[in-house]
Amino acid sequence: MAPERDLWSKLEYLFGEESEEFALEVAFFSRIDREAGTQHFEIVHGDHEHLAAGSPVPLSETYCRKTIAEPRGTMAVSDALADGWGDDPAYDTFGLGSYLGTTVTLEGDLYGTLCFASRAPREDPITDEEVALLELYGQWLTYEVNQWTGPPPRRSVHGLREEPASPPAPRLDSMLDALGNEARRSILLALRHDAPGTILDVSDRSTDTEEAIQLYHTHLPKLAEDGYVEWDRDSNTLSRGPRFPDIEPLLRLLEEYLTGDSRWK
Image (cartoon, rainbow, N blue to C red; front, side):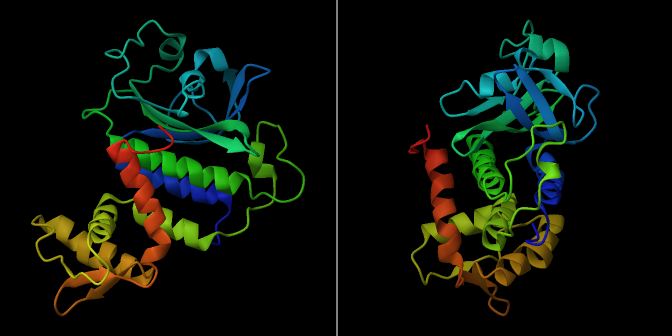
């Protein structure tokens, strides 16, 4: 995500990239008003007849009502009917067969949710790694929402879009961009497992032609440009780059989610 983009542009970019990564067709950022019992969709990516930016819906009819009630603030539904949602008002209203959502806070209080969903069930169950990645995005969005300057965000159907752009956070954007792709993520996690100074041979990381093209023409140049890896093209090896220590805390959090050794669980 380019640092000069405002929050709305960053979300549009995130939704475009991660809808495919999560294999879920729609995504949205919402504001929730518990007192009024409503949920407002502030930005929506993808086509769904009942998900439209600016439209409030009763909170009692949404999947997110259960997300915000979870102690962890995150909920994953791979197959709504199999998971017992068939008689739920949220399924009646939205007909979502799969859903992945997490909470976003403003000054310590609930602001809303960041979610991905599809009408159909997921062909493969939502993984712990995907849940962990969404929670990292939720933490990033909480950070961004709390950086807004001037008066508090206006409680209108346009929500945060009416406020000034958030100050750039290039380092955080760069780290989330690196973690948002499975190939780049696996490289960084592999380097984290190795001791500093270890050389990683990447020649056998992909046998698929299309994956190899993406690896050598997109992922490795991106990681090297951002300073997370040192890529020796002659020997086709990788080592930790000068900015690897910047991203290592997020890698550690990601692994904690995946192993179950997380303070948020």
